[in-house]
Structures are given as C-alpha cells and as structure tokens.
Amino acid sequence: MEFAADSVRRSILVGDLPAGERILLDDLAEDLGISPIPVREALRVVATEGLVVPVARRGYTVAPLRVEDLEETYRLRLLLEPLAVQLAVPQLTPAEVDGLAEELDLLAEAFSAGDWPNHRLHHRNFHFGIYDKCNSPWLLRFTEMLWANSERYQYVTTRIKGELRQRATEHKRILKAVRAGDGDGAATLMHDHLTQAEKPLHAYLAAREAQQADEERESATASS
Image (cartoon, rainbow, N blue to C red; front, side, top):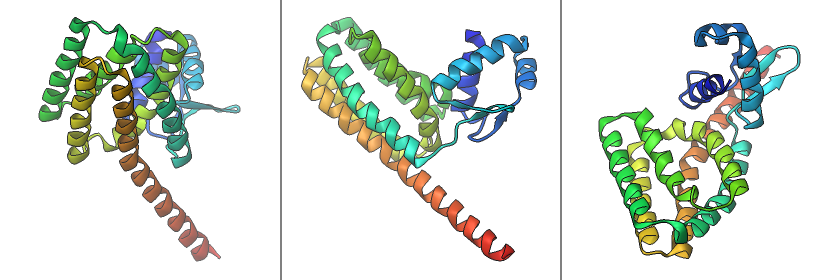
C-alpha cells in the first residue's frame, strides 16, 4: 500500500497526474503492476493529505490548485516550520549541520544540471534535516502533510531560475544561523523564506484564476 501511496504522491507532485484529473482505479493499478485493493487504500491515505478528493460514485480526482488552498497551506506552514526550526537548532550536532551544508551543495548541483527530481529531493532533505530534530512528533507530522500539499504548488515555479537563486541565498542564511546555534534567528529567517517562496506561486495562481474567470464570462456572453 505504501508503494502505491508514494507513487500517487510522486505523480501528483511532478504533474503526471494534473490538478482536477479523475483517477481511474483499475488503470492506476495496472500501471503500478498491483491489484486495485492496495491502490484503493493508498488513495484513502493520500486523500487525508489533501492531494486527492473523493467524489461520490466516481472514485477520486486530483485536488485542484487554488489560491485559497495555497494561502491556507502557507499560513499554517508559517506557524509550524519556524517553530520546528527553533526547537531543532539546539538539538543539531556539528556533523548534522555539516550534512545540511552538503544537501545545499547537492541542491546547487541539481539546479545547475536542471535535474528537477533531485532538486526537489535535496530541497526537502535540507528542510527536514532541520525539522526532524524538533523532538515533536505531532509538529513534524503536520509539517509533513503541509509540505506534501505545497510541493505541488512549488513545482509550478520550480524552473523560474531567478526565484530559485533567491531561495538558495535564503537557504545559506538559514544554515549560517543554524551553525551559529541561533534558533530564534534561524526561525525568523525560515519565516521570511516561506513568505518569499509563496509570492510567485500566489501571483501565478491568481493570474490563472483571473484568466479562467475571463474565459468563462466570454463563453457565457457568447452563448447568451
């Protein structure tokens, strides 16, 4: 079941299952080479994470990308992730901090190579290399759920290089504060980092929703 859930998450996050698409249980099971039963259970799990939406008598569809959902996701991330950083910094060993620096090096290499799957991997590894040390299982669990939902929004602007360069600078500042043992400073920098990361996503979705609204009005006018 976990294999099926991971496969569904990955397909949604990279856009292979686009927002709003209906998920056909039998087809998905065939693609994964497993029976429909674990796929059905996997979809129930992924639905609790907000990535898919159950539809009566139709199974599931991929959750839409909406400004409202993005705003709520980041509003909660801004509360939880700086707290996780603040709690984690005193627990991190020098070796673990060195590991964070290595993740940023690998992240930069993936960016230069245009290797987006590994870019996503090392980005997550850097953040959760910090969060995992917060010693709060519930905080970590909620953070993981919000992260999973926000990743599919992040993928929309993954290749805007100017944005990624700015995020890389912010990562280095966070690492510097972590290495100095400045939990409060690192938490503030993480809050700023998330605030800046949301802006291009919000702008993209707001523009897309406005365009869709214009198209719907034009279609309604043409048919009246």
